Each structure stands twice: as structure tokens, then as C-alpha cells.
Image 1 (cartoon, rainbow, N blue to C red):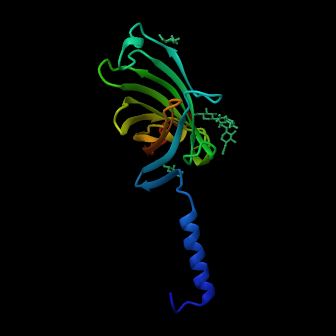
Image 2 (cartoon, rainbow, N blue to C red):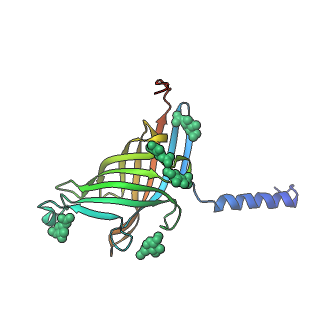
Image 3 (cartoon, protein in one colour):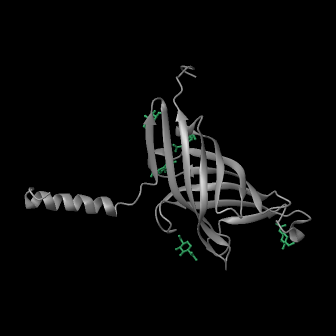
Length: 192
Ligand SMILES: *[C@@H]1O[C@H](CO)[C@@H](O)[C@H](O)[C@H]1NC(C)=O
Ligand SMILES: *[C@@H]1O[C@H](CO)[C@@H](O)[C@H](O)[C@H]1NC(C)=O
Ligand SMILES: *[C@@H]1O[C@H](CO)[C@@H](O)[C@H](O)[C@H]1NC(C)=O
Ligand SMILES: *[C@@H]1O[C@H](CO)[C@@H](O)[C@H](O)[C@H]1NC(C)=O
Ligand SMILES: *[C@@H]1O[C@H](CO)[C@@H](O)[C@H](O)[C@H]1NC(C)=O
């Protein structure tokens, strides 16, 4: 860089600083052949107490109160999903669904939920996830089983881990990375 005029060096420095300061995008798409591969990276706020609670218990089984794994407990949730770990950062989606404690022997849940995208180029599209989440594992994986709108015929998987956990309230921030492949499909049903 030593032969560049000083104004060019300033410009390059500014560009480097801007690149360093820019937050990671919460959604990125790569196109390979007839496939789009989209990666989401965002944070789910699972609030179990307080004025902004987003998780509610709807049912207990007769054994839930004595079960070491809370067997039979069913919660519904509508969690805010943000681009950054801060709950007040941009909302990019909601995740809405049910979580059931379905393992008699281990702390594991069955989760069935829809990520409803509320921002950006995929605004109003949904991604459906359904799978088993072992609560004691630091990193969990859950399949993406489909979607709507931009994610018709989508397949993929989500990887999630705790970003933070508040033991006083049971509330947590979960970091999610979701990888989704959407294939192009020829318009066979013209006019339908
Ligand atoms: C609840 O949400 C409102 C609106 O986003 C916010 O102003 C308030 O600080 C939140 N309360 C708590 C306890 O987080
Ligand atoms: C679940 O069980 C607990 C303790 O037995 C009880 O306090 C709570 O009200 C029950 N909740 C529902 C939704 O049945
Ligand atoms: C997303 O779509 C909704 C309608 O479903 C619209 O009200 C909203 O303005 C859109 N937001 C963005 C960021 O495009
Ligand atoms: C949102 O997407 C659904 C399909 O998933 C579509 O039926 C609906 O019209 C869309 N709403 C808006 C406001 O774009
Ligand atoms: C891939 O994404 C581009 C840009 O959003 C879109 O025009 C194209 O239809 C998508 N292709 C597939 C296979 O979904």
C-alpha cells in the first residue's frame, strides 16, 4: 500500500473499518445450480416469566409432577427471534409451536414449530421444524421438514445451543443456525 496516494489509503482504511464493524448478516443465500442454500443465524428469546412471557404451560400428565424428566408437560410458545443476541435488536422472525416433554428416562423434548420470517427478502415465508431435542446436550440438531412461499419443498436442519440462561426465571436466549435447501421446480401446472 505504500505507493498509493494518501486519499486512497484513507479510503481503504475506511472500507476495512466498515467491514469490521458491519454485523454478520442474519440471512445469506448461495445459489449452486438449481438450488438455493440459505443460512439463517439468529437468536430466539424463550421468556418463561415476567411481563413479556412467551412460553406457557398448557397441560400436565398425571405423572409430570413426580417425573424426573417432567414427562407429559406441554408448553406452547411464540418467541421473538432477533438478528443479534440483544432482545431489543431487530426482530427478524417469530418461532411459534409446541414443546412436549416426551422422554420417560432422559431430559428431552419433542418440538414442533414454525419459524415465521417477519423481515427481509423472505418476509412472510415460514420454515417448519420438527424433532427431538435432548436438553442436556450443549448443541442440538432439529430437522427442517418444509416451508411455505420462498421455502416450498425446502429441506434442511437447524443447529441450536444456549447463548445465555437465566436460572432465576428459567428464561433463555438460544442461538440458532438454520441451513435450508430450496430446489427450483418447473411450473408444470400452468394457470393452476
Ligand atoms: C417488555 O417488553 C417491552 C416492549 O418491548 C419493553 O419495553 C420492556 O422493557 C420489557 N420488559 C421486560 C421486563 O423485559
Ligand atoms: C401442572 O401441575 C402443577 C403441579 O402439579 C400445577 O401447579 C399446574 O397448575 C399444572 N398445570 C396445568 C396446566 O395443568
Ligand atoms: C413483512 O410483511 C408484512 C405482511 O405480511 C408487512 O406488513 C411488513 O411491512 C413486511 N415487513 C418487511 C420488513 O418487509
Ligand atoms: C403471506 O404468505 C402466505 C403464504 O405463506 C400468503 O398466503 C399470504 O398472502 C402472504 N401475506 C402477505 C401479506 O404477503
Ligand atoms: C433463488 O433465489 C433467487 C433470488 O431470491 C430467486 O430468484 C430464485 O428463484 C431462487 N431459486 C430457487 C431454486 O429457489
